[in-house]
Length: 184
Image (cartoon, rainbow, N blue to C red):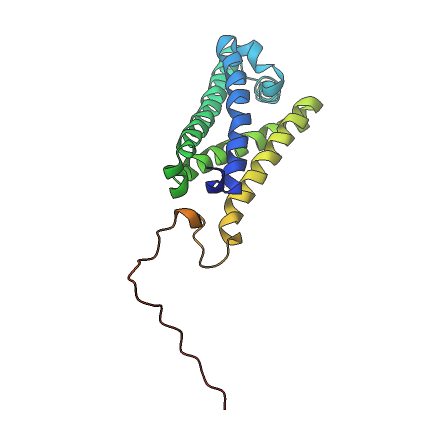
């Protein structure tokens, strides 16, 4: 089983294993108490931006917090789909989870980058470190997912390891040697 995993699949699975519980917990805190959950460390950058910079009312801040929950849970849902698809070797070898991971990667990267910029503007150092780490994690996953197909040797199928490749037909005849040029 370990021989069928590519390095980008390992990285994507580990990235998903971080973001699924972290963003689910942050979204859950907003769902329980929208204003209080919005001022928790993972969400403080958006909380300051919604209330101080956009000067939204309390109802507007709650609506913006729910929009944040929807975006985060959408990312989590795509990551869960990815993890479920790569858990089966047949779908992992076909690369069926790649689209779900890339959609989650795009949404998550945009949200983390925005949160990092907002935290830097608001002066929240702890939130800035958290969102910078998340942004770097997602950027590294994106680079690896996009660059790995070009790192494979030409002619090799990266999705089908050698031990799963079909065996050559056994006909009983000796292989035909290649024609060699004679030197003068």
